Structure formats: structure tokens, C-alpha cells
Image (cartoon, rainbow, N blue to C red; front, side, top):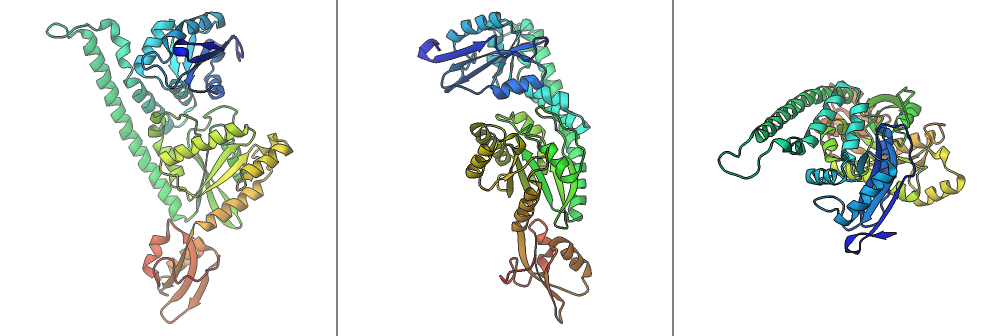
Length: 441
């Protein structure tokens, strides 16, 4: 234990835990936090990006230094850690301000990146679809736009007034204008792809199939669970952000057809550029009738709770915070019996499941069906005989329902998905909610 300037406690560990000594880049992980930070996620991000971890260093202080991220007294220790560990890269566990990145890089003499840059690099490597590549490029441009000033500092002139407007400023403004033009073009193209996605979504809605979205922390096993539930053959791998593009497949529960969509994984401190750029992808989660929140049950309790909290925050940010959810504790095959009992006690409403072995899949299906039924809206309708199409549609939507032949038409008491209930409003006897009698189904 050491103390930095102003009596702030600072700790370091380097020369340990190098995953891949032959990697071209070897990063020293750096963090600033009031308490000892957990850098496991940053290490895993670097591993996914193909960067070896040469060690860790952190400083305990209330907030990062606004100019250099680390306090001045900590920079000397950082330089020593770099020399001792052989690191050729510094990776910070926060998104740095452009001046923090520039000043820290000048102080240590090697490149400095933040967690946002690492995540963007991973996304660029994993993007497969045309839309995914557009989304990544947009996020990268928006991230780099504020950092362009540092690229041309050797051309800038100091001072002000006549004669001081040099080619450096001209080049900077040119680059910024080109970047803004490209950002605008990318947003237009993404709007067009979003329109195509909306068209496909409307086709699914016309098919009257309830939709379920798999959401959760990255690498929680969502794709494996999708394969287990639907028989799909989605590619899976033990790395962060393996799935960037949504994948939808059909499956059945109790004779009712459902659509299941796998979405991009979330992460702690998810960069806002990615939330904005992947709005179209995240929209699949927003529009789902039900969200299955997938969590890695093999994580420690503290880490598990943190992952749940991080996903809840992103769902709230994209407007899906109030959606009905099922908590699925995946990878339960990696957990011993004592931990299973603890999980049952701490998360009583969750389903313990393994997408790898199939354990708990029936319980998950039952939970999905029960939650979905709880979202159905009770309706009391009088459908004219001439409107047979609506009656057929109601049968498809509600499954079992009570119906009574009357002189005016067919009296129907049923429960239908809230999203499609408005289209039957014109047949309502007493308004939505019906007469209050308990319908079948």
C-alpha cells in the first residue's frame, strides 16, 4: 500500500497476469476510483481485442484528475510500472476527455486508450452485417470527432489576431467538416435500414406472434440459450460482444408460437456512442412483448448483482425499463449445489437454466408463458357476424376464449396482447377491460 499526493491511497500491481506474452500490444490497466476497482472486465475486453495484460495500477481518489486522469504524484509510479512490466500501451477503465488522453500520453511516452476505444475496436472486429458495420463506423466517428484537434497540433499557431490563422486550423476544420458530413450520411443510411427493419417488424406483427427478446450482459450465454430454445445454429464463442446483429427465430410453448430475438450484449459503463448508434438494434428489445434477462450464474454474487444493475440501467435508458421480464440465471451447470441454494434464496423469482446442457429449459418455457399471459389484456367484445376475419384473428391471438352467439353478433370474452388490443376497441362492449368477468385462456 502506498500513498499518492494529498494523502490519497494508491495501489499498483504489475508484471503479473500476462495472458499472451507474444501479443504485439501489452497494456497496463489503469483506474481511478474511491474504492478498489475491479478491473476484471477491462482485462477481458483487452483479451477479446487481442491485447495482453501486463499489469494493473490504480489510484484511490474521489474523481479522476481533470487534466491527466491520474494525480501528478502518481505519474512517476506509472512510468516505473511501464518500464518494469514492458507495457507499450496504457488502458484506462473510464472514458477519457480528449485533454486527459493527450496529457497522459505526453507524460508517459506511450499510447493511451480508454475503455470506449477498446469496445469500439471489438465492435469493429465483430460487426458482420452491413448495418452493423455502419453502426460501428458512426460510433467511431462520433467518438473521434472531439479528438481530432490533437492530430494537427504541430501545424497550429499560438496567439490571436491577424496573421495567426495557419494551415493547422484549416486542416482541423476540414477534417471536422468531412467527419460531420460522413456522420450525417451514415445516419441517413441507418434511417433507411431502420425503415426496412420496421417493415419486417410489421410483417411479424401481422402474423400475430408474440415476441420475446433475450437481453443481458455480454457473454452471458444468450446465443447458446437461443439455440437451445429454438433449435437455431447461431454462432457462439467465449468472447465479449460476439453477437452484434439481432437474430430472430421461432419456437412454441404450449401450442402457441413465439418469436425469440437475440440482441447485442450490454456492459458496465456502456459508451453512449454505442447506445445511440445501436438504437435500431436495441429497438428489438424495446418492442418485445417480454424480455428474458439472461445472467451468468457462475459469476460471484457481487458481480452478478452489478451485471443485473448495469443491464437494468441500459434498459431504462432505451425506454424498456417497464417491460415485463423473466430473470434467467444461465450457465447453472457451472454452479455447485450450495451456490444453487444461495441463488434460489437471493433471486427467488429467477429461473435457473443451462443453455449448454438443457437443464431448466422447461421451467424457462413455463415462466415465459406465465409472464406472457400476465401481459394479456382482458376484453369483452361483440363482433358482428359479417366480420369473420376479426373472429379468426381473435382465435389466433387469444387461443381459448369464451364466445356466445347473440342476435347482434358473437359475444367474445378473451385476453389479447396489449399491443394489438386497440384494433379490437371498436367491438368493445364496456370499453377495454370488459365487464370484469374472468375470461378463458
